[in-house]
Length: 304
Image (cartoon, rainbow, N blue to C red; front, top):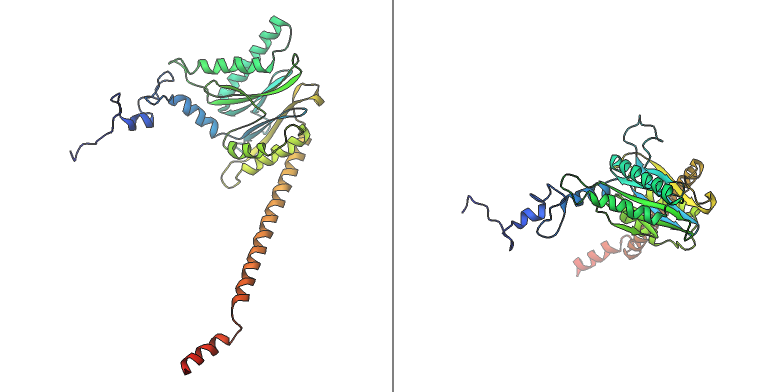
């Protein structure tokens, strides 16, 4: 027995350690593990979680998307390989995850919008764009000869019929959900916490630019992460409900405001630390006996 490994097996006769690590169950997206997991879909989701942060916010007067686009090389032109794309005049999306996979989803969304316009003579509502894209993504999780997309997309658009601006997210497993605010990528948890603090019912798109720039710069760690370029796009009443890139001067102003706010916050924290240290040293000094009293007391005890 000393030379054999003892393994715990479940009711199906399958090693529980094998099921938990995915060994033998991650060769195809059509295979479920005994505990109901599809590991290839989970791996695709992990690719999204490790990518640059993507934030989407539905404001009072439109929808804004912001992306932390990682610059892999100093020789790379900043405006190349964009992570935001227009799929129709009224709708666009932002990508988190593998850029090459995202490019395929952009082309698919554009084809769907063009076909809808040819058949019905009107723009495809953003909700239908999101659902059709979700159906396409889900198709790649139910066939053994395919692999899931390692990309999630945030879709912003304007519906002419309902006169409403909308925000959707399509996940690698084919889920399609509508949001007031969303975050994808490695900084998603921190960004979601900050979004929940905002009053989205009254927040304007111009104000959202500043807040979103601050969120992305907050989650960015200069010592660990590679340099990035901030990309922003919106569909607002000011643009005639057309999906457009945010003018670069507004992006630069938002970044400048965000950096100033973070610097001010750091200064306030330093001041609080200094004040706390001074107060602690004052209490210590106040509690100590005057010089010479301790020695005199010791001498009296010896004499006694």
